[in-house]
Image (cartoon, rainbow over all chains, first blue to last red; front, side):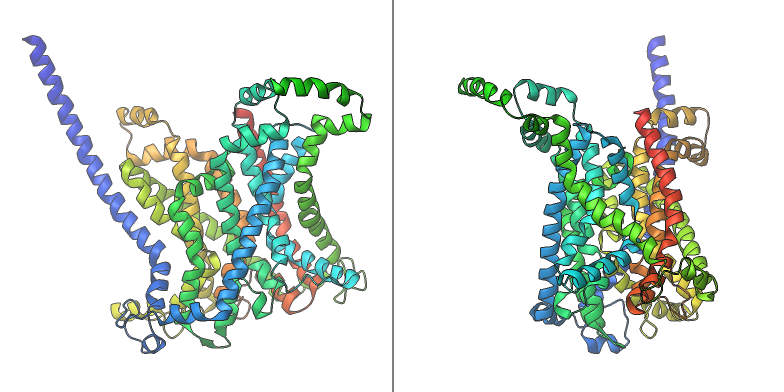
Length: 304
Length: 309
């Protein structure tokens, strides 16, 4: 009897306390949702506005009606751009450059990270730190000397490196390789030593160890590094702006900015459509591989 | 079985080969060869240009004569240069502080949600970071358009006077920083959210029993526990923001009257458009000290974390 009343009392107290906490939580939850909605509005306004404008005809844009609403939605901007030869060339250049850069980056960084994480050699620890430091050197410091070097190479050997889209395949690895290596070192060091010892005992060589154990185990890291390299090489703006000028050598971001803005005439419907199409590949990858994307983002600074 | 036999046959052959071959089979040599492409890329495309830009900065405009610190002396006498220094510092510091604050707040709100719903919100909030900055800056440029600004349309309907977003130097500076905050704060949010997840729940429970309110929980528990990530993220972002190019280039191109130029855009204008490569290199070198300081602290932080683990 006493037991049950005590239990009931305890239950009541527990419920009462629980009730107050849950009320507090509900209020906190309400405010969290409230402010999160405000932030989402702030964060999503530009892309949504891009989309709204991309559905408008130029007549509707210049009519100065409500800019936040489409009265006569039309796909003419999309049709215009996607049937324009120039735009498709930008797209092709961007795609080839990004795919090549991702492949080069992954080959270089996987081998290097394996060597630095598992097989020590003279100066390997310094090199690992050096890789991290080079990741911190920004492109805006490097483009001037690189531009001059390429001009010098042209003078000496006659190989024209400036104003060719493929030169970006040489340039972008400076941005992607250090970080991808750093990321892969982190993933490879987290693989237990017992695994490679077992492989060594079974008679595996280093290459076998890498292909049979490290690469399969570190697949999430590899995907994260690939996503990173792709996003960086797709989005880069400074290098193509400095190194390419002819309309058929441009990649997507620079192509949209320089060819669609002609003097003071802004074809805003087409610009927004182009920007949206240019943003689409990273967004699609992000939509499907969000968890890898985020793990790559956080691992860069937290794994050390 | 066949494997074992094959290996038995190979062994004598191997030991009989040249010492050079043996050297090539050594573990450290293989490792070095595997890291060689990385070393080549870093040496040719990062280290060499970085030092070459120091050399370039000491030449005259036609790059025929060594002028020592002549370019720097010339820069120090120009008003535009000091304006760029001021704007770069203002831009980077303000943007990083606001990005950190916004990221911190948003991370806490997302962390408050029930865990099933967090994914969805996190996914939406990271979108500004995923869109290539050049593309999203175009959308901002259109939002700030002098005659069709969608913000001004809203302002007119609310009875607020219109704003000349990119035409007025002060507003232009504000816009450039705002867009940078918009692009960068999702990154802070993700980092801080990851840090928040690693704060043990027991600490909050203990604090709740001691009667701590929400502010005390954040100030005395979350902030100290997240200190490392907060520092590293801010330093990373300081480097990236300080070297920022895309946003200023597209949004204002340095204007009005060079008021919004940062080091990267001004160096680009001088070197590529003005065809004065040494002067551009000198300007871009001014980014180096701040980068070095930030890199030093990041490295110390990363090392310390490595030792703890």
